[in-house]
Structures are given as C-alpha cells and as structure tokens.
Image (tube, rainbow, N blue to C red; front, side):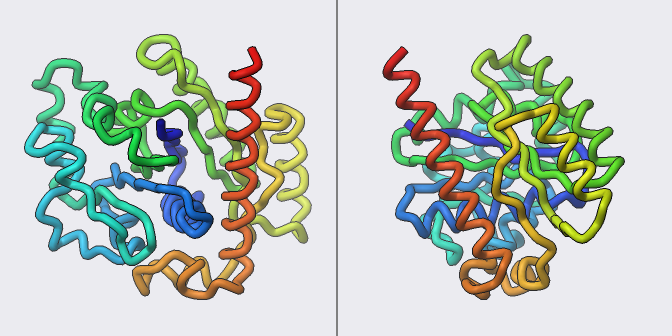
Length: 263
C-alpha cells in the first residue's frame, strides 16, 4: 500500500511545489512507483511536471466531485517520470461544490482507495492556505512533509501549522503525523539561517531531515521548462539534494515499517 504524504505549509514561497515535483521525480528515478496529485488551483505542479494544465481533459476537480474515478484522471508516466493527477483553475469551483457534498473532508481519501496498492508513494501538493482542499489532502495522508525557509516569520508560521495538523489528527485523521521538516533555500553563510535551523532541531529533533535544499538557480529555472531539476540538470546542487532527500525518506519509512512489524 502506498505511503501517502502531503507537502504543505500555510506560508507561501517556501518551496512546496518545488519539493513535491522534485521529490516525486527523485523517487521515480530510484524505481519507486509514484503518483503525484496537484491540489492547488494554480496548477504549478502540473505545469512543472511537463503537462499543460489548460489541456487537461480530467483533473483532480473531477475526482473530488465524482465526475470520474482517480484511475481515470491519472496521466501515466508524465514527462517528469511519475504518474500525475493534474489541476487547473476548475479546482477553485470544487471548494464551493464540496460544501454541498456528504463527507466533504474525505472525498480525496475515498477516491484514492482503489489505486493505493498501485504505488509506493502518493505525494500531494497543496495551496498555501488552510481550506477544504488542504483538509482533504491532510485527511487522506499518513504524513506531512513541511518545507520551510530558515527565517523568523517561517518559524512563527510553523507553530500555527503544527496546531492545524494536531486538530486534523484529533478530529478527522488519527493516522496523521509530521513526517519531516525540510529546510529549503538554505544558505549556511547567513547567521539567521543557522539560528533558525538550530531552533528547529532543538524543537523537532529527528523530524528535521538531515538533507537541506540549497538556494539553486537550476531549481528556479527548471519549472519554466516543464521539468524537475533532475531532468533539467541532473548535476545541479538542487537535483543532487532532492535525490538525497528521496534516499533519506525511503530509509526512514523502511525503518518505520520494520519497527511496526516488530511491535
């Protein structure tokens, strides 16, 4: 059964979509079966995967509103190397429509049940806000990866996000937990970066990934070519960092599964 992970942060511009696209590509490159789901109406993860959001025949909007099954909406082996359920502006309407539907917080979870066994990982990209789309993603997931910059405002924002995750855990999804904290746009030359990084490790301990994602021009350029950094410039520091993250994530989950079996 797939490990379902939501990549989210209520603060914008921290590298959520960059992380989702590049982690999905890196996991796929290591022969994992990966499905990425774009839950952001902006459709940036869709475009960054090499798929034109304007030409989607079926999207996550159709899945959430029961216009089609998840299997029908999957684009197999996108140019980025993984399967994709894309998104575009239609998804904005889904929020209003979901309010009228029963079990509206669990629409994505129910839709994914029939396809879970086909993948090792399902990664979900989210908008930078807490809305019904994000709640659906969190309700469907077993873990949350939180990308964040090592700056003061990001540190403030993460406490609010942790509170949100705890509420979802208590009310909607008892399996939900923080899978890991990912430090993005990392610049070790800045003293603030080091200070915030130390605070994160002090508070979250081994939840903080050892891998850090550096500021990297190739990471910024790759989306305009509709490619993850691994396919745009595999030797770039950004591409190498996300490959390292994929390895670290896989090792952690393997260890978690081993501990569960032994318990």
